[in-house]
Amino acid sequence: MKKRKMSADAGRDGILSFVHAADLHLDSPFTGISGIDPELGERLSKATFQAYEAVVEFCMDEEVDFLLIAGDIYDSADKSLYAQVRFIEGLRKLEAAGIQVFICHGNHDPLDGWSASLKWPENVHIMRGDGAEVVEFKKEGGTVALVAGMSYPTRHIMKNLVKEFPKKEESWPFTIGLLHCSVGSNPEHDPYAPCTLQDLRELSYDYWALGHIHTPSIVCKEAPLVIYPGNPQGRHPGETGARGCFYVEVSSGGAISTRFIETDSVRWHIREISIAGLEKEGELIESLQSQLEDIRENSGGRSALCRLVLNGRGPLHRTLREEGFLEDLLHLLREDEIRGRQFVWVERIEDETLFPIEREQLLKREDFVGDLVKIMEGLKNDEKALDGFHEVLAPLFNSGNGRKLICKIDDGEMKSLLQCAENILLDALLTEEDHEN
Image 1 (spheres, helix red, strand yellow):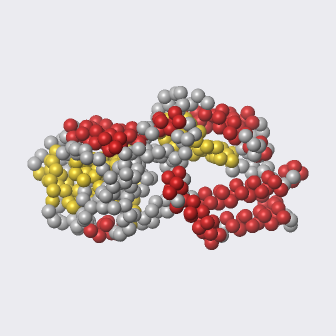
Image 2 (tube, rainbow, N blue to C red):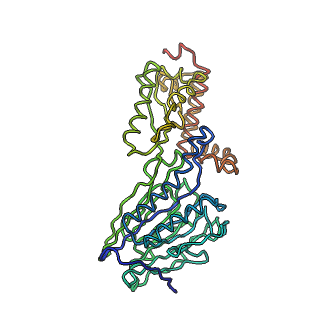
Image 3 (tube, rainbow, N blue to C red):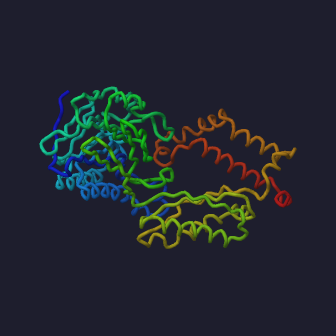
């Protein structure tokens, strides 16, 4: 197979270093936020670009040899002109620093999507989509690494692209596979370019730089090292925790060391707060404010978006169910947050609290209430019933607007919805005497 060549000036003696990033999703909206508060939406619209800039700045600060981007640079095939210009601006900074860039495209930014006629910097190599290609990386006059990669020619790639990659030959130096794909099964992501870990192992590469799964993870710690860096910026409550990229160093003897680099400027949190032991509204407010301050103090200076989930049993359950109470509470917690440089914004308050009554006692009742709780308990533990609910809701999530605005729910979230439905029904059926018993 013919190899392309890219080179860099001499850097660290005997060491190859690179950054592995993926799923930038530049210009991606934060689901449901901009409609709630336009000013917040405007600030969040910059977050994906700030995360990308953090990746670029880290590459320059560490003087790495090259940057790998494993697909989904943009959020859609019809990427905005603004996003394309900002992306190329970052690449030009890397070019000025003598840092090479290897890119493969994924399902959100396939090669057949629209692209503006912009001049690409000479330090960039984009993997073609008609088959895997191998690109040489030269340093100090010698080839020190090979990058084998392939882009998606079109969005819906359901075949195993790993089968099109060449096996590493004995004479090859440190070899990297660059691909946007699904290794094994992951219910949170569509199975684009599905493959197995064994497929990757059979090619005898040293490192697989993958994209598509948004949660940072090391799939395989032994040869070959297989890593998903996740996305550099979380965009919804399903993407909580630190987000970033991986910094990789290879010694002259071939030993590999990795370090996760945080790049997110805004971080998602989900906090669960029990109302057990809380008697008055003021106690609840103090508990919630304490959670927000804890997030602020431990955020490393970055802003945060937080979903608060209230659970447990207690007398405040009835208050939380009163019309307008949660809206007022949300307004109180959000007040003046946007004006600060570092904000902690409460995206939503979810009420999963229960009556101050033992549910086990309700299960023993021989009346309509008892039958209701038994039915709901059965549904939550019946896989066929849960599958039926998913099937009924499928048109909502698969519609054009649904895919843009809401995320698919798993069995855990479905059970939570059933519990909420039970709470609403019990609210209407149980009397004050039932609550006291």
